[in-house]
Image (cartoon, rainbow, N blue to C red; front, side, top):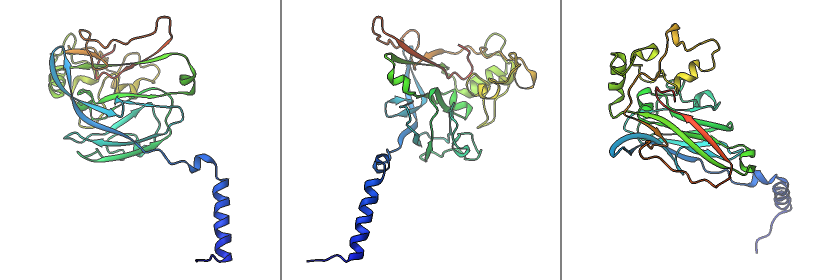
Length: 270
């Protein structure tokens, strides 16, 4: 029969008392990170198959966090090219912001990177900061619920808008630069193809640069006029569906709805 020394007994008792006095949240296990994957997927665009990019979370494209839930995400690049994701509307540490080489490089194919910061409530989105990838639909909703969202008696519906072309992003940019993208093509900051990893002129990433600047008056960088609907896109999508084959959301008669609308288009003002 083993015996315990007086010193060992006192140490064990002190440890037990310490555990008993710890707040309950400290005893709970930290939730596992959410897995998010940048990967290819196939859409049906008016009866024609299209291979695009996407951000797949546990419930499909995008993420929805509950009130107080931290943004703890493991992002894996399952694409064949490097990528990096910006968390639009969030204020993470600079190293997690998702701008190429400021300071983190692109995620290499197969690489996983971890993110952990306090999430800001609201209707947000996430997208690649490599312009040609955003044009290939590498973007998704990022919804962070507030306590009143759970308390309210209403149905939540997300409408995620995008523009789409069967042509490659490089071909689209060449058409716009050459004036062949539609009426008045070639205006403003979209008149030349951006370098890899630089923000692209459009309602998405361009909004981060000029959207909150007073007195812009529709003028782009360097005083150039901007017309962001110059390209004749093959389709306009809402939740990856076209108007000819829309997603139909069932709602309760007389019920209340919160509609969250996100314009994630590369170069279209809806």
